[in-house]
Length: 86
Image 1 (cartoon, rainbow, N blue to C red):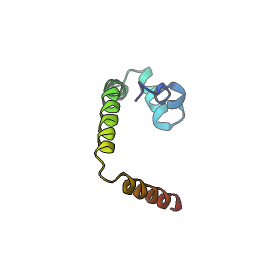
Image 2: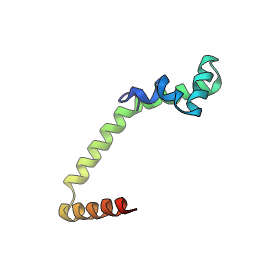
Image 3: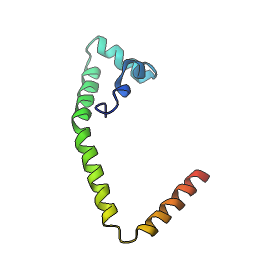
Image 4: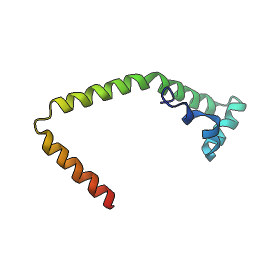
């Protein structure tokens, strides 16, 4: 995640929420909560490129194997139109 968008883990972004402020405080004291936050942040940074590649590969495969692309497109249009009405 942060490999693509550093702003989600920036100090400014964290200061915008109560949990974010708590994470910053925990970081100052090197608490267990901050260590856990940092662990998952690093894990997300490592795994995001693989996720993005897997997602795009699978999406392309689905597009290529769609036996009725016109019907799929119409169904998607209907679903999006319905969601806008809600």
